[in-house]
Amino acid sequence: MGESLPLTLVAYRVLAAAATPLAATLLRHRLKKGKEHPSRMNERRGDAKIARPPGPLIWLHGASVGELLAVVPLIERIRARGFKVLVTSGTVTSAKLAAQRLPPGAIHQFIPYDAPPFMARFLDHWRPDLGIFVESDLWPSLIVEGADRELPMILVNGRMSERSHGHWRRFPRTIAALLQRFDLCLAQSLDDAERLTELGAPRVQTTGNLKLDVPEPPAAPAALAALRTAIGGRIVIAATSTHQGEEDAMIEAHRRLRHSFPGLLTIIAPRHPERGRGIAEVSAGSELNTRLRSRGELPDAKTDIYVADTLGELGLIYRLAPIVFIGGSLIPHGGQNPIEAAKLGAAIVHGPHVRNFKDLYAMLDAAHGAVEVADAGKLAVRIGAWLKDGPARLAAAAAARQTVDRLGGALDRTLTALEPYLMQLQIEQRSETDSDLPPDDAIAPDQDAPGQLSPNHLEAELRRMQQQGPRHA
Image (cartoon, rainbow, N blue to C red; front, top):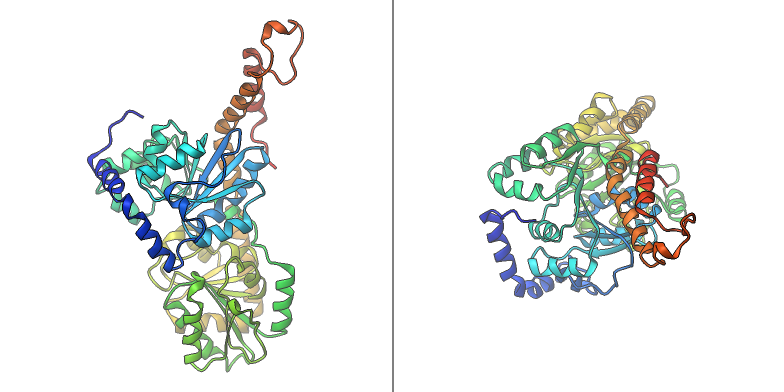
């Protein structure tokens, strides 16, 4: 791409390149904090130990767990079309999730640090044919290096929050230079689409939120049976994806409720599992019997607080707890995803800070599938009301499920938007295969060489695939 970069991006890339000698020090520091995988740190410098697979390669990048989960169904559909898929993310927890959830044949790598030499090395090795980026993880060197190689790039499930929009409006040429390098931006909502367009994205479509089409999170049958047996007939409530400070509120709510509801068990699943021990200490300090799942412990009859400090087990919790508080919302974090809880039949409680899913929470609240609370006291009151009134709780859970079901369809709309790019790759792959066959004059004029596409055949194939539309697994 020939357009010159604004000075902000030139300066960023120069500084990032100059800082590459510090990468080893940064990696060691992050490794000590558990933020890097000890045997895969080479990937952060763009070095790959895995060979590039033959044929067209589609690269999908999502920052962390939430973005990766959102596109797993999309990856499955793309793999079902026969494409090789490379998936990158930036966190250790997302890498563990990728090992659990990605379909067979999909390759996971850590995204390199956003320095030109590392990104260049990464792209020179993998040579992707299409780049798909999830939500809002816009790394300048990644985008510029991809555009310089004429890599078609598409933003899917695109987000541009009011906060980010306000930030980027102070640097209009910078964000425009990045967004203009995308072939297409597929936005979650009309608001996101308008903000992306205003900031310079040339082609924007509204396709909806892919997270609404993510299937119910799985639960290992043996683990679910063991936990159900351990719990027995006790009343269960849960707080999931919690952040620091919110566990205190849930522990306080438990203290207020346990006398009215003997045998109450509260499950707390922190957003960052490594915080589990600290949460257990706070709970024990409140004279509550506490057990940690990361130690292999199950709750017994005396357990008050069960800390589920493990990864990828929300499916277990949502199948056991009929009432769930969704974290990131009592503190000004922006709120975590309520969709999985709604799909598995939970009545949902949340705090006021839900800007990350503002429209969805507004619809859930309006449908009475979720209720907003302001503090630990209101949290205890709302949970207690639902524990006393089973029909009201069941009605809330049904309303939540119906709301997320009604808002689905983003996966099909996204695939429809991607179809021209996927179709082009398939045609190019067939053309490359045909180049290995004998020339046309070696074949009788009235014969069709198996698998060969002449120019006329290419046009016919293109028309056929366009009429057929997206093919789903």
